[in-house]
Every structure is written in structure tokens, then in C-alpha cells.
Length: 561
Image 1 (cartoon, rainbow, N blue to C red):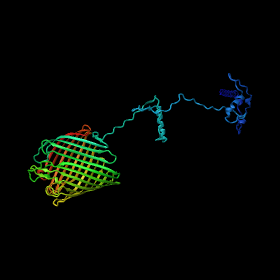
Image 2 (spheres, helix red, strand yellow):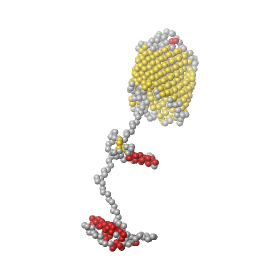
Image 3 (cartoon, rainbow, N blue to C red):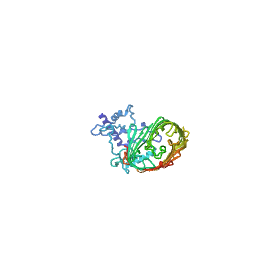
């Protein structure tokens, strides 16, 4: 192998020396116009007459014939050797074989464990050549329409022009709508809120009497529960409040009160829903109520008879596009407690307890997302436990009412619901007149500012009574509430209402005016300080013994973990 390389070098050296010795002698003549140059046309005879080149010192230089025979195998490459007169264009360039890298490159390894807070990556200075070149590449990519293409990782800048990249700004924390709202307890997928409100205060007229008025301090305790579901479909809601007030200086003025409701919605399909409802209320009658008045002026009621109502309802709602149809059936049970007079006599009110059965169809249509008119009707029947009341009147009755209304949202600041119609009730006793009249129900909510909200409500109800000769009570009320948040945890609420109670057939009309203010300061999510003042005045056409005025001041705490 070494002898072949030596022979190749010797032959190359011989050709170079020959070309340098007589360049003009070996240059071929210029071809004439129109003559082509071919290997056979070259005259290489002068090369044979050149003098012999002295050998290279230290090596035995081969003759031209030996060099030609030595080069012949390397130039053949599977073909026959060229004829003796063919020109020689030089040796072919040997293939270059690069040396293997040392040490050999290592295989790529997975990145090491990433820390929780890694160091920021480096980026070049904005005025450096690297930064300007990267900006020019981005501009060229935009011009070529390469938006959205895969971005290759950029080479880290050299340490001479590198600086830490700025950390991205943290996202602003999401503001809670009620930062002082109670969190409640998680019961599976339900959320339970429990609270207790102990309070103390002063009432200028505990029994709401017109004569022999005596004020008293009192202690009041309210407890309650709220239940909410967190389901993607179906829904469960429940509310319950129970309270009791104890007067220190007035006997037989202590009384309980409470209210509760329950709703379970079961979604059979996307357009079919079933609702199960339950309701509860607890209240008392004041001793000076027209239905408890005695014919003797010196005989008065010494207790506060209880009124308890329990009710349930089941309804099915079917949607046909924007049209919703609902059919609802209801059952209510009303219980009354007997009244006791100071002379030892008893007014049998337990016999006036009754069952109410009703059916309520409803149809609504969504004209726009902000306007949904509806029409509904109610048919019901009331059956008392005793055919005759304490005054000898048969008060079983049937009632019907119809109304049309709409829910609306004029702007983001003004929304509500309004309806109007007519209602009447016919009694089994022919001596009792028909209880009837127009009904108007509405609720309007106006958010004047993010801190101030106005709420206007009006309603009409038809209720029972035991007043001799009166068919029932047609009540209308209007209430205005103004809520203003002085701070996120400090709100002040002003309220005012006006109500009329018309005892149809009994020639008795009552007017009730109520005004008050409430303060609530939330120390934490679970503890709040509450204070309130209420003024109430009732004026009745039944006589001076039925009118009253009361002032109530109360303060306490609310615990809701």
C-alpha cells in the first residue's frame, strides 16, 4: 500500500516538472476557425524529446513509462486503458474521509427534574446584533405569510449580550361578588348553610293593643338553614327559619314565628322538567284582630292564637321551542288555634281549619331573551273541618283567578316582573257575599349604582276570616326597599310599606303603615353585627280598640359558619 502511494506521488511530481520546464513546447496549437479539438488532434510528440529529469533525492524516480503503467490501474476503474496518444488531464481527486470525533457525542438524555420555580430564561439585549437579527427574521416570516407556523426554538444568546427575561405579570386575583359571604358546609354535592341570631331589644307595644299599652324589653332567637345543590342538571333548594321572642315585662305576649320552603327540580329530558315543592309558615294573631273581637267591651283575648300552614305542589313543565307549558297541582293544610278570653270563655277556631286543593295551568312564550309574557289561571276549593264557623256561617268555598303578565329586562340596571288579572271566591253560605276584585302583582328591581339597589313590590291576596258577616279579606300592599353598601361589609337598608285590608261584607277597612331601617356590619364571614328600628301604625274603621302604634328597637349578632 505504501509503495503505490509513493509511485503516485512520483508520477505527479514528474508531470509538474515537465509542465514547468517548457510550457510553450507542450502547449497544443490553437485550432483553426471551424476546427474542433479532439484528443487525437493533440501533438504530444515534443514530450518524448524532453531531457530526462533528475531523480528526487532519497528516492528512485520512475521513468515516464513506469509512471504510465503505475497510473493505469488507478485510472481504469473497470474500463480499458486509454490509447497511448490520449491526453492526460491530471489525477482524480481522492475522496476525503473526515476523522471520527473524539470523544464521540453522547446520546440525548431527558431533561433533569424541573424545579417548582425554575430560573427565567435568557434573552439578548434589545440593542444587540442577535436581538436585531431575530426581529428581522420575524418580519421576514410575516411578509412571507408564515403566521401560525411552527416556531423553532431559538439558540440561547451568548453570555456577553444576555440578560434574564422578564417574568410574565401575574394574573389579577378574581374578585368575589360577596367576599364576606358564608362558606357553609359541604354535604356531598350539596351546600348547607346554618345560622343563629340572638338579639335583644325593646318593644313599645308587644301585643299591638289600642288601650292599656305597656312596653317591654325582649330577647329574640332566630335559627335557620339554607340548602343549595351544585349539580349540572336537576336542582335542590331549601330554606327554613324559626324564631321565638320572649318579653320580660308582658305576660302572654311571647310568640313564635317561622317560614320555610323546599324545591326539587328533576330534569327528565332537555325539554321536560318536574318540580316538587313544599312550604311551611308559622304565625300568630294579635289579640285586637277583628276576627277575635268580642261583643262585650270588657272581654278581650289573653293569648295569641297560632296559625300554621303546610303545603305541597307538583308541576310538570314541557317546552316546545320557545313555548313553555306548565300544569301544577297543589294541596295546603291550614291549622288554627283556639282563642281564650279573660272571662274564661273559648273561641273555637280549631274548627275553622281547612284543606285547600288547587290546580294551576300556565303558558309562557319567549319573545326575546329579555321579554317573556305569560298567562296563568288558578282553580281551588277549600273544605273546612267544621261545616259552620263559631258564628254559624258555612265557609266552604271555591275560587278562581286569571292573570296575564310578563317578565322583562329593560337594561342591565332595570329588570322585574308584572302581572294583572281578576279573582273571585264563592261561599257555600248564601249570606256571605262574593269575595272578588282585581289583582296586581309586580316586582321591579333597579340597580342605580353598584352600591345602591331599589326594589319595589306590590301584591294582592285573598284570605280567610272569622269576622261575622264578612266573606274574606282582600289585602293589597306596596313595599319599597333601598339597600346601600357603605362598605363591602357594611350595608344599610331602608324599608317602607303601605297595606290595606278590606273585609268585604263586614264594612271594616284597615290601613297599615310600616317604616324601618336595618344596619348590618360583617366582622368576618361567620360573624355579623345587626341592628334595626321599625315603626308600625294600624288604623281601623272597626273602632279605636282595633288601632295601634308600635316602635321596635333591636340589636344582635349573627353566627353563620
